[in-house]
Amino acid sequence: MGLFDRLFGNKKQEKVETEEEKVLTELSETENSADEAVKNNENVPSEEITVSENLTEQAVAAQEAESEDLQENSVQENLTGLSKKENEQTEAILQENSSSEALTGLSKNLSAENDLSSNENAPESETNVEQKYEKSLEKTRKTFGMRFNEFLANFRTVDEEFFEDLEDTLIMSDVGADLAMTISQELRQEAKLANAKSQDALRQLIVEKIVDKFDEDKLPSELNVQAGLSVFLFVGVNGVGKTTTIGKLAARYQKEGKKVLLAAADTFRAGAIDQLVEWGKRANVPVVTKAAGSDPASVVFDAMQKAKAENVDILLIDTAGRLQNKDNLMKELEKIGKIIKRELPEAPHETILAVDATTGQNAIQQAKEFSQVTPITGIALTKLDGSAKGGIVLSIVQSLKIPVKLIGLGEQVDDLQDFDEEFFVRGLFKELL
Image 1 (spheres, helix red, strand yellow):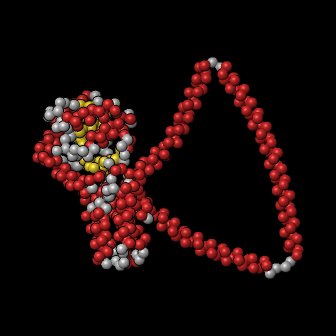
Image 2 (cartoon, helix red, strand yellow; image 1 turned 45 degrees about the horizontal axis):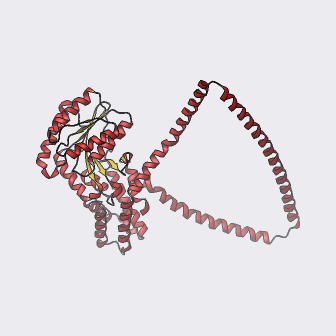
Image 3 (cartoon, one colour; image 1 turned 90 degrees about the horizontal axis):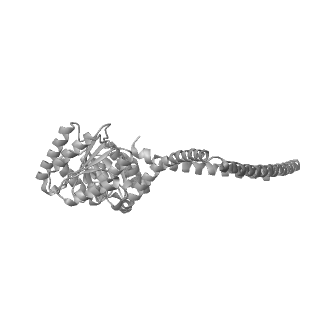
C-alpha cells in the first residue's frame, strides 16, 4: 500500500459508503411506504383493541419503572449524604494525625497524579506536533491549492497542453523541475488518466502520483545517535538559521538528560561565536570557543578532546558558511574532518546542511554546492512556518537524494522537530482532496 492510500484511502472508502447508505435509505423508505399502504387497507377491530391494551400495559410499566427510579434516587441521595459526613469525619481525623503521615499520603497522591498526567499527555504530544505541521504548512497549502485549482479550472481536455500546464504549475509550487517532469511523463503513459473526466478525479490522481513518488524516494530520516559519543557537524550559508538549529537541538538533548557540548568553529564571524555562546547559556550547555579569527580546526580539536575526557554524549559543531569562497571553505571543512576522524574514526556521525525554506529553489542550489564541498547526510529545513515554499521538501528528496532530518516549525525552542513524512504530506495535501 502506497503512502497516499495509507493517509487518504479512507476518504475513498467514505465516498463509497455514502453512496451505499443512500441506496439503503431509498430501499428502506420504499419498504416503509408499502407497509403503511397494507396497514391502511386493513380494518380489523380486534387488532386495534390489542394495540390499545398493549399501549395501556406499556404505560403502567413505565409508571412503575419511574416509581422505582425515584426510590433508587432517594436511596442514592441518602447514601451520598452519609458519604459526605464520613468524608468530613475522615478529613478531621487526618488533620489530627501527625504531619509526617499527612505528608506521606500527600506525596503518594501527588505521585499518582503525576503518573496519570504523564500518561494523559503522551498521546497529546504527537497531536501537538501534527498541529504544528499543519499550521506551518498553511501558507504553502493555500498557495499550492490556489495554483492547482486555477490550473484545473482551465482544464478542458487531457492533451499535450494539459501536461505542459501541469509541469508549470508543479514547478511554480516548488515541487522542482525534475519531479514535475517525472510525474507529467508517468501520467502521460497511464491509460487511467483518460477515465479521469472530472476536476476532482484529476486532482486526486495527480496528488496520488506526487505522494507515492515522494514515498518511493523516502530515505532514513532518523538522526544517527550513537550509544557513546555522537558528533554532528553543521554546515550552511550565513543567515539560514544554522546556529539557531544547533542551539535548539542542544536544548532538546539536554532536556532528555544527555550530556551536550557545543563547538563554535565558525571563527570567521565574531557574531556567530557570541550567538552560540548565548544559546549555550539558554540550554545550560558548555561551549568550546576561541578568539575570532582563530583556526576553526583547533576549536574542533579542543572540543573533541573535551568531549572524550568528560564522557559527552552529543557534540554539535558549528562551522563557517562562506560558500562564495568555496575553495577556502572546502579546505577548512576537510581539515576539520581530518581532526574529527583522527580522534574518533567513525565520526562525524551526521553532517547536517541547514537550508532556509523561504528561499525555495535557491535552497536546492545551496545543497548542490555544499555537497561538492563535503558529504551531506541530512537536511535541516528552517523557517518553514514563515514560508509558502514548503514543496521544496519534495524537490530536495527527489533531486538530491538527501533526507530531510530536522524541520523548523516555529520560533520556540521545541519547534525544531524530527521530520515526519506522514505529518508533512497530510499537512500539505489534506485540503486538496
